Length: 151
Image (tube, rainbow, N blue to C red; front, side):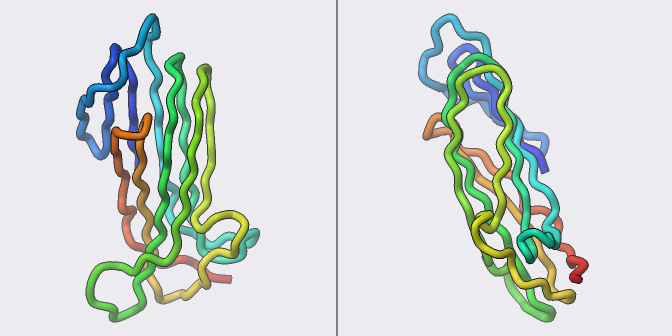
């Protein structure tokens, strides 16, 4: 899943799943643009975690200083469970973009804790939300629910 954010001429352009919106940003003097792209991997088993995790990658390119806040969510659904998937893990990070090209990777759950226990009959999905410069909101996902190959 992909979401993009673009700061251009005082507007933040955000696109997710084919939609693009323009939201007024703080005035930008003598700057051209900053583009940010966020992607979510499918939930998968990681031997390093160990357990089920998801990676969220964010890349910004440009020359407009930007603060990006990213929130990641990992869901699970036991077999036969009726209702929305259960939120099983979260993580959040704040990134300061100063110009050029910068890429960050965030893990859900946080890389300092183990991944979720792997259940071969569970279905897993992920989503993310975020803010650019503290006010502009964007979202990606959820990913398609799928089972994970467990060791």
